[in-house]
Image (cartoon, rainbow, N blue to C red; front, side, top):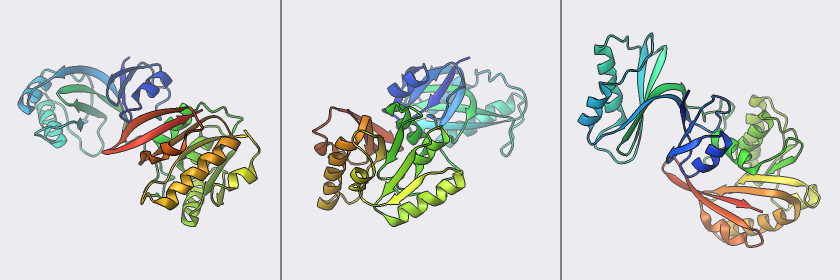
Length: 302
C-alpha cells in the first residue's frame, strides 16, 4: 500500500529517511507502512495523481477518479501554491461529483474522508488516514513561539537521541520538546527557561500529559552548574522575537555553555537566523524550512 504524508517543507529529506520513504514533492513523502506517523500533519492512502491547468480542468479530471470506498464520506482539500481558486472550491466540486455518483455525503460523522492534495499544478487524491496530527491535547498553555508536536518529534529524531541519554531543552517555552521526549521513552528530561510564565505553562502542560519532567526557572548559566562536561544532549527552539543586543547575548552565552556540557549533535531551531553568528565553535549544518507561511532555521551542530 502506498501512503503520502505531509511534513514541513524543507525537512522532507530528513523525514523520508526516518520512514524509509521517498520525497515526491516539497513537504510530501511517500512511504509504505503506517508505523511512525508523528512527523506528519496529514497522511492519506494514495489513489491517483495528475496535472491540471485550471479549476475547470481539475474538476473535469476528478470526475474520472474512482475513490474505491464504501459508506458515507466527506471531501477535504489542502492547497499549496498560488491559485485562482480556494480549497473549498475543490472540496465542494469533488463532493458534488461523488454525490451525483451515488455516494452519501456526511459532513459531521463520515465513514471516509477523501483527500485532495493540490500542489501548484499537481493534484494527488487519496483516502485520509490521519488529520490534524500535529495538535496535542496537552498543549493547553501555548507559547506564541512554541513549536508543534510534529516539529518537536522530528527534531528529536534528527538529533538521534538514545533512550538512556539526558535531554535538556534550555528554552522550553511551553514544554513541547520535553513532553514529546518523555512520551516517546526518554525519562531523563529537563526543561529550562528564564521566563517564569513559560515554566508555569510547561508544568501545567506536562501535568496534563501525565509526564514527570523537571522544569527550572533560570538562564543558560544553569547548564554549567547542573551538569558535567559532555553529559547532556540539547534540543531547543531559540527565542527570536524583538531580536536585540540582550537576546544576542543570550545566544552567545548559550552556545558557550552548550560547547562545554553537550555531547553528540545539538539541534536548534529559530525564526531568526542570527543565532548562526554564534555557532563558530561548531561544525554547522544549516537548513531552511517552513512552518505554515513562516520561514524557520534549523541548525545541526557537532
